[in-house]
Image 1 (tube, rainbow, N blue to C red):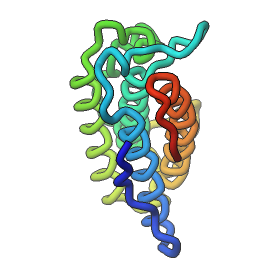
Image 2 (image 1 turned 180 degrees about the horizontal axis):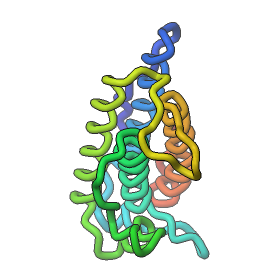
Image 3 (image 1 turned 45 degrees about the vertical axis):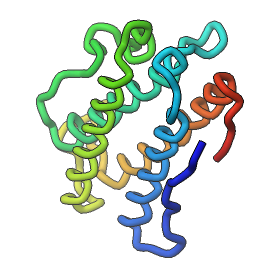
Length: 168
């Protein structure tokens, strides 16, 4: 795998640090999926897990949409992948799913999240409550870094199983 990710700066303000660490994690997901066929992206982890790289891309597209569109901005947009009726649809329904569609949706949600994030102070509160609480933009950014980092660990293992490729 050719790694062209840009490392976050060693000394930056809080906004730039959060944004660049999140982008580094996003780029890591793309790197873990790079150069694979649709069949390889659909390959599931060992039983009983139904996790696959394609499922992770679909899941993270959903997560980007949920936090930035639904919670932070209170946009009235539908859930992706049929998650309104099946909470695990992003992972479950990959056998016939289009990798091109999944990556296009993920990239669109990432771009939208970047635009939203650039226009809001870190202290801004989400317009939609979750579990009865308002979440700050800062909290959402930290959570997204954590979400990607955790799932990129899964992606490491999945990619190694597919073709032996490893890396940070």
